[in-house]
Structures are given as C-alpha cells and as structure tokens.
Image (cartoon, rainbow, N blue to C red; front, side):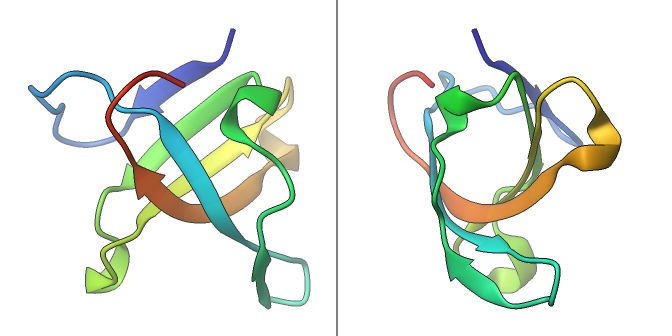
Length: 80
C-alpha cells in the first residue's frame, strides 16, 4: 500500500487519488509520466498548485528517499 504524506497545510477534504502526468528527468527535462502512484511505497505531496500551474508537485520513492522522482500531476476524487 502506498503511504501518502502531505507537506504543509493538511487538507480537510476527503483524500484524493494522485495522477502522475509528467516527471523531471536527470537532464532537467519534463517528460510524460511512465509510472503510476500505486507503484511507489511513498508519495509526498509537495504542493497542490505548483508555481500557479494548476498541477500538484509530488516526490515518489520506494525505500530510499535519496532515490526518488519528482512528478507533476493532478489530485482527483477517490483513493490512490
């Protein structure tokens, strides 16, 4: 099961599932997402409106937080 952590103000709304749309690769290029949130053990929600884009920013990783991926995507109604 994926553990989701919301950094900053806690939302009082019901938890929303995460949809990854893009990720930042090692060359600092934005690419289409290749993985889904449920494929990671941990997903940190960094921002729900990153730089006013309307997209949320996430940090997803397995066991080692030093080996994660930054994603941009949506918070939608439902579960992870």
